[in-house]
Image 1 (cartoon, rainbow, N blue to C red):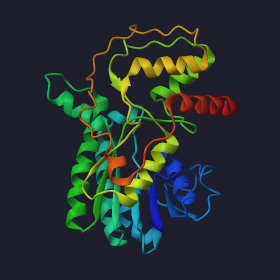
Image 2: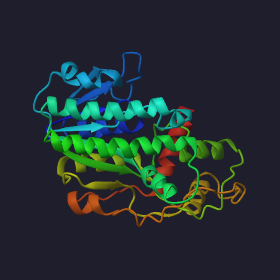
Image 3: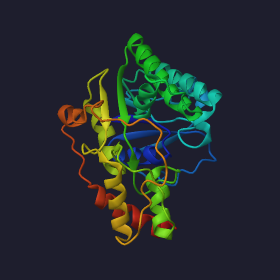
Image 4: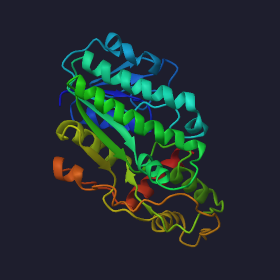
Length: 305
C-alpha cells in the first residue's frame, strides 16, 4: 500500500489509523468535515494531507480529493456512533446514504479497496431481533450499520471495488473522550467515584488503540475481498475480569458495585466471530495486553486532565 484515504480522520480511531499509516510510510489523505474541526492529532504527521469535506458532500468526494492511484479507502466517518444521536432515525438513515455515497466516490477515484468500519453492535441487534424483545431506540445505530454494510458491499461489487468489513469489538486507549465504558469508568475510578455495574458475567473484548490501528492497516493491505475481520484482542472474557483489572491498575482496594445494575440486554458468546481472521490472513497479532493498555490510558488521563 502506498496511498490511503481515511474518512473521520480526526476521530479517536481515525487519528490512530492516520498515525499508523504515516509511520509505515504510506501517504494519507485525511478527510475532515470542516475547518472548525480539531485536527491537532494529525496536523503534523508526515506524508499526510487534509481535505475538508462534509459527509453530505461525500458523493462528490472525488472532486475534493483530486488524487489518483489510491490503494485503500477506510470509511470511519459516522454521525451518532455514541450518545443520544444513536437513536435519531434521520441521522442514522443519512449515515447509510453517506456510506453508499462513499463507495461510489471510491469507484470514481479508481480506488481499489473499501474498508468499512463495522461494529459488534450489528450482531447484538440481530440477537435482539431473534427474540420477542422490543428493541430500544438506540439500536437504530446498530440497525443502520447493518443496512450500510449490506448496501455498501453490494454497491462495491457492482462497481468493481474490493469490499472489506472490519468488525470493531471495543477500542480503548489514550485519546478516547467519548462516553464509552472504559473511558467513563476509568475516569470515575481515578476520581474516587463509586462505579456500579451489572454482575459482569457477559462476555466482552477490548483492544488497545495502537493494536486496532495496526489491524486496520493490515486488512487494508492484505485482507480478502468480501471477508469480515474481527478487530479485537483475541482474548474475550467475562466483563467482570476486565473491570477488576481496571480497578487493580488504579487501586486494588477500591470496591466495585457488581450486581447493582440489572442487565436486560443480550449477551454475545463471541462464537459469532472468527477472532483469528486478521492473524490468519495478514499475520498481525495484537501486542498490547489489557493491563499495559490501561496503565498507558491512566497515564494519559492524568497528563491531560
